[in-house]
Amino acid sequence: MKNEPHLPIPADEDPDLESQLGDLGRFSPRRGFEDRVVTRVRVPFPRWLRGLRDRTRALLSGVRGWTILAAFSTATAAAWGSMIVAGVRHRGAVTAATGLSLSDVTGWIRDRASEFVLVPAMQALGELKAALAAAGISLPGLAIGYGAVVLVSVVALWRLMAEPTRAKGAIDA
Amino acid sequence: MTVPWDLSVASDQDIVVWAQDGEEAAFRELIRRYQRPVFSLVYRMVRDRELAEDLAQETFIKVLNAIDSYRPEHKFSSWIFKIANNAAIDHLRRRELDTLSLEGAPDAVTVERQEATALQLRDRSESPLEEMEARELGSHIEQAIAQLRPEYRTCIMLRHVEGRAYEEIAEILGLPLGTVKTYIHRARAELREILGPLKE
Image 1 (cartoon, chains in turn red, brown):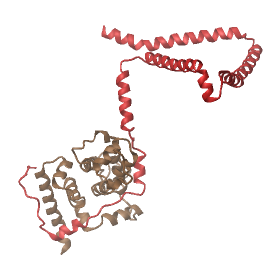
Image 2 (cartoon, chains in turn brown, green):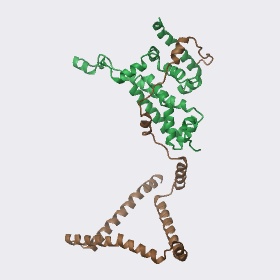
Image 3 (tube, rainbow over the protein chains, first blue to last red):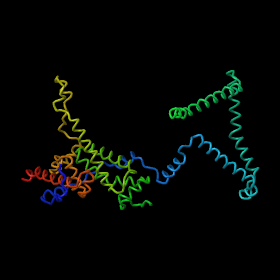
Image 4 (cartoon, rainbow over the protein chains, first blue to last red):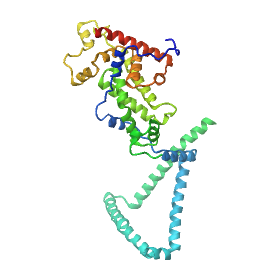
């Protein structure tokens, strides 16, 4: 079709047709249309959260997973260590503020550990020993076997993770 | 920018910004605003209620999932109408390709094979949905519009039902302004021609 930009806007040539066209209404979809659409739409995360994610990604791009894990573990250990050291050094102030002495806290921790960890662990160990004895396996033998399996798994995992880097290096070379 | 309680008074541009910020209420407001215009356009193009609903739904999903790529220099309405119109046109093209012969497949040599491949004509008794469609699209003007070429139909709908400016229709259809004016001019002439005998 020819482009005709000079053509005037069509005039109201037929009032009857204009009135019929003017009477054309809108139709509505079935009830629940809005919900049906919303369930299939991915609502994005808030902008600030996406910004934070992008900045983190930019910061960490090129950094290996093991480095991040090591940094995170070190930071967590440092935070806990600092807290414990500060708590021990200023135990007088902490006791005055909370009404709890260091021995109260350690006693509470020891009691909880004994109640929820040590006692159930000893019970489980006893049951395991009995089951192993019934099966004719000694506990040291099982520990050595388990240790060997863990060692082999770690080495295999390490080799698998290192594989793509070596392959990439081989191509680049 | 904080989201107000009543979104119905906010502009499309503001609502899109809130939607881009992950506000579900903004998504819902856009659907509420455009569900009838989009559905009406598509319904008049394909003339099948259920199919029109599917295509309208697809349009919204496509638009809202790509809300981050929306550029505020364009009108939101132009963007959504463009996608709705493309969905309807694509469907009409596909349907044209899929049209079967009433007599059965051309390679059907036996009577059984011809019967098996022939297009099944609808029974005279209409379902409630078909009755509703017949009521909705059964007026003379609706039937006349149905006979127009799809691009003329879109122009007439956007101009007379949605009240869009010629410039916006040109943007929606990706056509020069002059072409849109010509389409509307010719569409009206065809409508007069179709409706003429009915007046007498």
